[in-house]
Length: 480
Image (cartoon, rainbow, N blue to C red; front, top):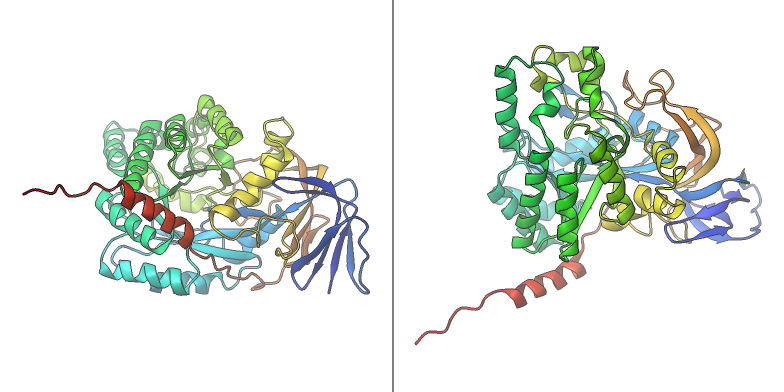
C-alpha cells in the first residue's frame, strides 16, 4: 500500500522546500509538488507542518542487565515510545561480560530485540581483550552488520577497559574499518572518590556527582583522543556532559583529528541541583553517568552543538524504576545508573533549541537524525527525505503542544527527568517503513515489525588513513 504525505514543508539537513512525499513498499519513491496519490493510497495531510527524517537515537540501552538488575524498558516498549516521539530508529548496545564471547552476547541481544516495533542496530562493547575478541570483531563486521565498538573507561571491577586494551581494540578497528566509541570517565579516579565520600558518611545520591566531577570526564576524553591519535583511528565520544570534555573534542577537531562528540538531551536542560533534592527517590531517579551538571556546562554544550563540535544528540535511555533505584539506599554507588528520554528527545530539542533560536530547523534535523546516519554509515538509507531512502518520516506540528509526565508517557518507567516541561512542537504523525505508526496521540505498532539494520564498515576512509599513517611513520636509521 502506498502512502502520500501531502501539503507539508520538507525539511532536511540542507534544504527546506514545499513538497509532497510518496512512499511505496517501505521506501520513498517521489518527492515533489502536487504529487498524485495512487489508487488506494493512504493520504496524510501535512498542511502547516514540517516533514522531516525520522529521528535516530544512537545511544539506548533496552533490557540491559546492569548493576544487579535489568533495565525496565523492553525492546518493544522502548521502540514504541521512540516512535511516539518521532524517533524511528535506535542504535542499542551489546555489552558482553568480561571474558565472554562477543558473538554469543550479540546473539543474545538480537534475540531480545526481535520484539522491536521500529528499526534498530547495535554497537558491540569490547570489555576485555584476547585473540578471541580480535577474531570475533572481524566476524561481527564481516557477517553481522556491526561497524562500531564501545569501550567503557568507567565502571572499575566491572566492564572498564584499560589503556592497553583500547590500543589493541582501536588498532583492530582501523584494520576492519570500524568506529571505536567511548564512555570517557576515569574509572580509577571515580572509584577512589566513591570510597572517599562513603568514608565521609556521604551515602545519598548527592555523592554521585561529587564522585564524578567534570575533571574525571575531561581527563578521560583527553586521554582517549591521544590514544586514538597514536593508532590513527577516529573516535566517537558518547554523552559529553562538561566543558572539559567538550574542550578536548574541540581541540582535537581543530587539529584535524577525526573526533565525533555526542550530547544527551538531558545534559542540555537538566540541572545538577536534582541530586540535592530532599526526596531521596527524586534525587536517585536522576542518577546516571556522567551526572547532570551546573548551568555553565549546559550553556557550553549548547554552544558545542551550535558550532558543530558536537554532532549528535542521544538519550542514553536506560530506565530503572523506584524499587530498582532503592537498591542503593545507604550506598550511592549501588544506585543503578540510568534515566529515560527516548520519547522526549525530539520535542525537548525543538522546544529548547529551535524555538529559542539556538538551532535552525536544518540543524535540528542534522543533530537528531542525519549526522548519526552519516557517522554510522547508514546514510542516505536513513536520515534523508529522498528517493530511495527508507520511508521513516516524522510529520512535525510546530504549534502542537504536550506536557511531559510520567503519568502519560509511553516509556516503561515510573519517572521522567523532564517532568512538567511544556513542549511546543511535537509529532502529529510518525511513519515507519511507510506505515503510519503514530497519529492523533495514539500508537499503532506491531511487535516484531522492527528490522535489524546492517551498518557497513568504512574501508575507503580507513585505507586513506592507514596510508597517511604509513607516510608519517618514522623510518629506520641506516647505519654502517
